[in-house]
Amino acid sequence: MSSPTDDILARWYAALKAGDMAAFREVAAPDVVVRWNGPADLVPWAGEHHGVAAALAFFGKVGAALEVLSVEPIERLITEDKALLVLKGHWRVRATGQELHLRAANLFTFRDGRVAAYEVFPDSAAFVQALHP
Image (cartoon, rainbow, N blue to C red):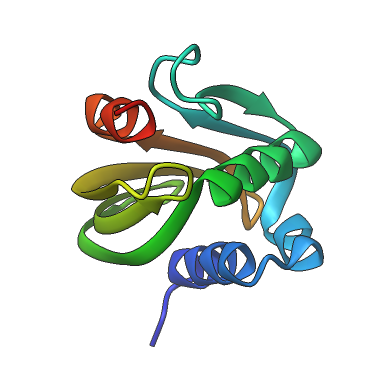
């Protein structure tokens, strides 16, 4: 049996994978904050993005730049209003063909059954190197 948190996470990732903006709007709080930690001058989508439209623009930039070859959760820490997922991923940079095999952490904050904040802690140096070989 899945928990409400599991359901929210499943809906979030499914909406992103399918590119389903309507489903994304249902799972994200209207004032959602998305943050990718890294140098904004070297990683085009890095920084903080406020609201659903900005979050969708963020994911559009990421999708235009990176092909997701695989992502597997390897650790999970769940509390009442937070989830921390450590992921093992394999990405390809579309412009350079460079591939990344690394871990990243995704921190979620939930409010009223939706994602209120999503923060990515990637290996920023690896992403910069792959984007600018």
